[in-house]
Image (cartoon, rainbow, N blue to C red):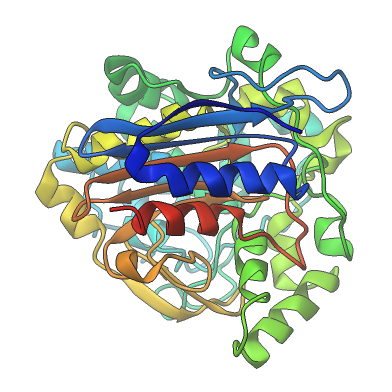
Length: 409
């Protein structure tokens, strides 16, 4: 039986029960969950193994590649530039990236990038592995493409391209890569265990991601082999819920269709071409701005703690960023998604307990990772693990933990 380590405020004993039950029922290999309430740590739990092959235990400081939880960090970096008057969110991307103004993209705004409305969810030319660490080169591929739909008329999850697009904007404005900017302006000043591209020492002790049972081609390259959208397992978790109707069935069909827009969005750059997929050192150190953050649960939760407390962005900046810009059917994920400026808002792709249905924000990560903040309730949460959820059957682990938290306050 797996021993659960760490501390839990007595008020949150239900959280510890849920966390332990996931291990007892075989849903976890290794995992950690941290919660801050009004800036104070009330849950800090971990257990299991960080590497199922070696048996290396999951420790308090075990980091993990958090996949698309990264998108919220990238969004925050861009918002910080906007807050400083260095970036106009409503202006065309081409104002800071002139080469982008080709093939009908002249009027795409930075806000379109934040909200997945740019019509560029796929990279149409194969990205070779030798280019994986050259984010500017990948961004240039996108600059040479035409949008799939008229920008601003629909939204569709830009699973990987979100990061290369918004990351290039950050680089053009700040002169630093997104990882360098986040380290200098957010992670290091606040002492967060969060790395946008892991140093060698951090990568060496990172949890090794293990794939669960997979069904169909959508996850043929999934972690640890490398599909990159957080929303597939979170969306498919909704398939476990009754009464969702045809959109979930359509989404499930898209998962199984190699040529679907969903799979095209997830599969390039093809992480599965690297030995070990997302566990490969190239992925851990590259710091892709859509999926590259390596963090402990405490570091991820601390990021949201500091956002909620106004230590990263001014409260009015965050409030505006949380205003829902798009809500409804997602052109890539098919079922409903909802976004502010880069942050997920509660929807089928971001399942949230009813108490947080209007106040929670954050981002999920492939396989079940979760970063969540809630200003009204003073919450910051981070959930990391290494047993990746199945893309079709999904996982409700993060939802159950969040439900236990909200039920305890």
